[in-house]
Amino acid sequence: MTLMILIGGVVAVLSWFLTGLTLKILRKRAILDHPNERSSHSVPVPRGGGIPVVALTLILWAMPFRGTFDPATILLLAAAGMLAIISWIDDIRSLSPAIRLSVQCTAVLVGVYSLPSDGLLFQGLIPVWLDTVLICFVWLWFVNLFNFMDGIDAISGIEAITICGGLVILSGIYQMAGPDLWYSLTLGGGVIGFLWWNRPPAQIFLGDVGSITIGFCLGWLLINLAISGNWASAVILPLYYLSDATFTLIKRGLSGEKVWQAHREHFYQQAVQSGKSHTQVSGAILAANIGLIALAVLAVTNPFAALGLAFFVVFNLIHWMRR
Image (cartoon, rainbow, N blue to C red):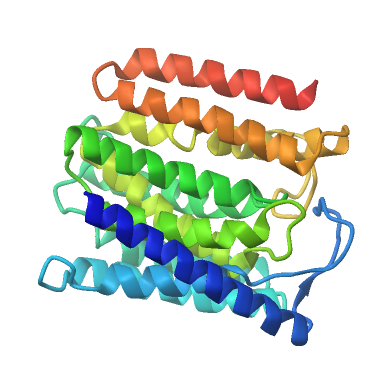
């Protein structure tokens, strides 16, 4: 365990160095995220900072750290690599929603084959074919919501780190089935290195290449946790992101708005518009997520009580954002 944490630290330092290098290249090539109707920043900021995190994750996840290559993981990484490429193209020149969605659907369908063959998201309560369909839908939604929520400084870095941290803690305490500790530590370490440059005021953004691909990898980790039987913990760890993105999507859909268009209606965006700083909002999310990690641990033995408390934590966070 100590060695694994040390490796995570080395990955963080390497990610910090490579992100700084990437920042210089993006500035030189003027690959910038200009303020728009969705933005919470007022000046152009380089985007594409997720490239080092994604590259390190794909390389490290492909390594035979247990002595042998895992064909299922290679399949997953092929899907993640395809997502990263199309998302980077989208960062440089915007692609149509149809192209983006079709590639995301393909990646999710490929990724499903990397999951344990006997793993069921709903634990056998529904037919296997329907369970598989719902896994695809949940995974696709998580990929997109992680992208939608990446709208202020440090927010997605904090979300990814706390999810990975929660998975590491759960694995350390319970030695539960699911993805090896290696995956959470290396992904989390990569995001920590990036977060140094993305802390308020952010010098660089993840871009779609970062948020889409990281969301895909996190979705795989959480789905594996859920199909191992720890469904409540898998829901609790990303609960704020799930709640904010899903509620906003439903509200916009019922209002007849185009749900795929950029906007500033998420609760965290409302908080910034009302005068709260990026540091205050991201810090509040960090504090809430630490509480959610503790509740995810509790959920292993008391799932329904932990889930109820988790919704209470998220409700209070959103109430503070809207206040």
